[in-house]
Structure formats: structure tokens, C-alpha cells
Image 1 (cartoon, rainbow, N blue to C red):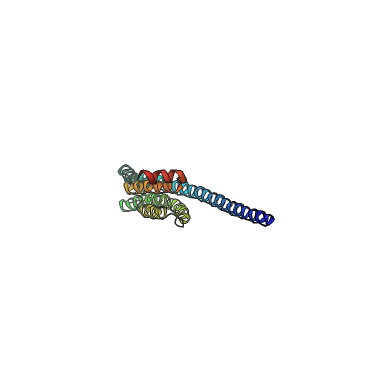
Image 2 (image 1 turned 120 degrees about the horizontal axis):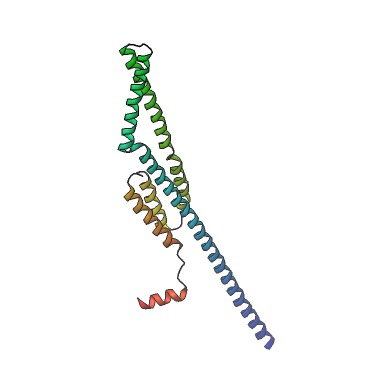
Length: 199
């Protein structure tokens, strides 16, 4: 009978140890998975932030290079000078007033055409940062945290109007807060219990 009780005690303690070991293993695996998920989310959020910054830089460069009043004035002045230079060259070569005017218009059109091509190339440079932002947003849209998904959607919507910097900055700030909340370390059991007692 003593042997039976001893055997039952050994089996019971073995079962308790097995359950405890299984629970600890499961908890450690869950913790590792959570840490890996947090690390991946941080990397994805950083990629999204970099893509947004690159897009803002490309848009600012486009504004600076092509859309300012000074740049438009410079282009107009260059077109006038090209017209005058072409007309003068045609006149020196013995052309009539009409021929001189046509050559001048041709030179101005050539200059404006080159300016237009360069402007289009600069605008096309915005496409790459937009693609990077969309690529960075894809894994964030599959996040397990709904606030991260909502903040990513809001940021993508703000990117559609990159000229509205106030909206873009607000969306980027909301995105940062959502990612920080999602990657913040969770409270321990003791901290949760203390917080529950104080409320």
C-alpha cells in the first residue's frame, strides 16, 4: 500500500512538473514570437517613415525646382532670350523679319520643350518614393493591431495629397503613436494587478 501511495505521489508530482514545464515552454515561445513580431513591426514602421520622408523630399525638390514664382520667371526670361537670340542670328544671316521671328519662336519652343521634359522627369522621381511607401505599407496593413492598420491607412490617404504638409505631418504623428503603443512592452502580471487595485 505504501508503494502504491508512493507511486501515486510520484505520478502526481511528475504530472504537475510536466504541466508546469509545458506551460513555461509555451509561455517562453509566446514571448519569443511576440518579441519577433514587435521587432518586425518596428522595422516595417521605420521603412514606412523613411519612404514618407523621401516622398516629402522629392515633392519639396519638385516645388523648389519647378513650381516657384522665381523659377517660372527664370523660364520666361530664358524663353525671351532664346527668342531674341534666334531672331538676331536669323537676321544676321540675311533673313527677313518673318523668318527671324519664326527662328526666334523655334528657339524659344525648343528651350521650353527641354524645360518641360526636365520638369516631367522630376515629377516622375516622386513615383519611386510612392512605390516604396506602398511596399512598406503592405505588411503594416496585415498587422495584428487594428490601430496600426488604421494609422497606416490614414497615412496612405495623406500621401495622396503630399502637398498638404499639415495633414501628412498629423498622419505621420498618429502612425508613430500607434506603432509605439503596439511595440510597447506589456505590463507584468504584478503591474496589471496593482493597476487593477488602484482603479
